[in-house]
Image (cartoon, rainbow, N blue to C red):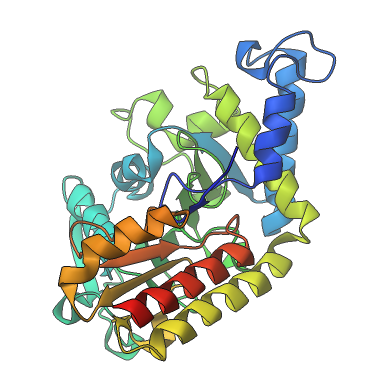
Length: 359
């Protein structure tokens, strides 16, 4: 068997050792006599898995005790609608920062439930930067301020935590959670799909401060009500049990790597190396302003777009897959999440140099 380097934006590459462990435990988890996917979510064996999952996430992110951790379904996209339903608390407005396709989608979905105030936007620059915070117009009557910390499609990432002017800060961290150190206490709510840095598709993590719970109107169904889910251990309905288990294995792997602080240094090194190769090239270009380049998603375009198809074909022939850029922006994109080894980034750099030499 020959595994390729998978640069997919998500679902993304898994640590190989995690896949091997899952393979070894497929038929029987420990001494249970059954596979994890066969277990009752309320049984003693799965309770061990679920408790370790939350405990490890709390440890890795140093989540304070006054925050609940929910493991939900529906992806981050479901949260675009559930956040206003749970957090408006009688208010009619919410403030959003628009920095790319995903924050744009969050705005669109929230508009069904409230008056969305777009406090700042980089749409005019084709989402290649973060708007200067000095010019942000944050409505103090808003229930919260929402932003997307890393835009997967456009490759734009916040380097620090925005000043929410006293409003609860809500953040979509789907594509960079666990990739860099964060201070959870500065947020009201953090949410993330698991399929980038944390696990398989099908698990959505919501980390929410206690005082923001319990304000959803009665029209919100229990499974979409954060307070109800918190009270029931995210098990109002049968959860995605096997996906919880796989997510737990990834968290254990991350702890073995030295935790978030250690993996952040590796991510800094990997992204710096790739951006350096792009910047010194005459064939490749990254359009994002230097201070806001993503460590996770590196888009680049070829000076001659007629070479795009040849680049993709040749990259796949060299074991480098999923490099085609999102259809909305074109070009190429290398997603180099936690599980991408430095050797994979180096293999891409070597290929890019050879492709440039021959074309």
